[in-house]
Length: 254
Image (cartoon, rainbow, N blue to C red; front, side, top):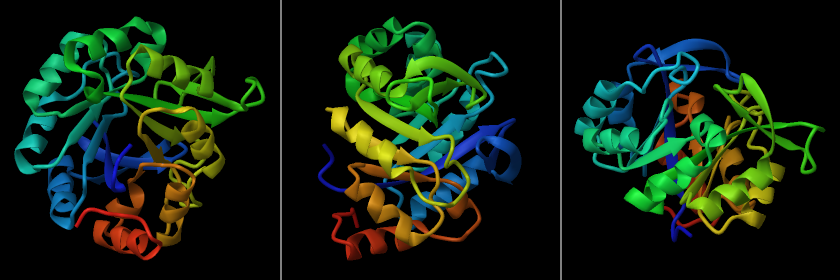
């Protein structure tokens, strides 16, 4: 597990621009991805997560040129996801400057992909991106979705997380579709459930809207907290979040 808590801004990108919506719907423009990444790096972000939210929907690869330009501007770990379908896609992203790669839909279609990536590049490179909804259709009450939250699968989110870790996933990015963009706080029940089963770091995502939302996610078991709109809209800075976490007793990087 991480020795210190990470604060990670997320850049959801569509058509070369950062976008943000509510529950993954009604996306609005939030700025240039390279400029925003540079700003967050200067604010003290521990990592940057870059997700091409329409790559899978549009059945195309992620935007490699934006990844490359972003990597030239920031000197902290960069995680890239969206449209990753093969180990060769991972190789190309790493060559463009990514440090870690997120997989979601392609791994659900073909779970063997997780092992192929982990065996070739190491588990530390592979982040399983879980877009999770509450649903009575599964035993845990949480179901996995794909295509940016648009398509609901039959997979129990907790069962899928366990399987993916066994196959080689090195980190879980757990995004609550229900909380996404609402600014009402992280889904703490979901974070606790993932922490209870996971032997790898857990990133809490979806719902951050105020300083007081971050520490409870860490207390629930998250190793890192990820947010987007509160940073894009200038409501909070990375530094403010770190100061609040430190005030609540969490260890953060300077």
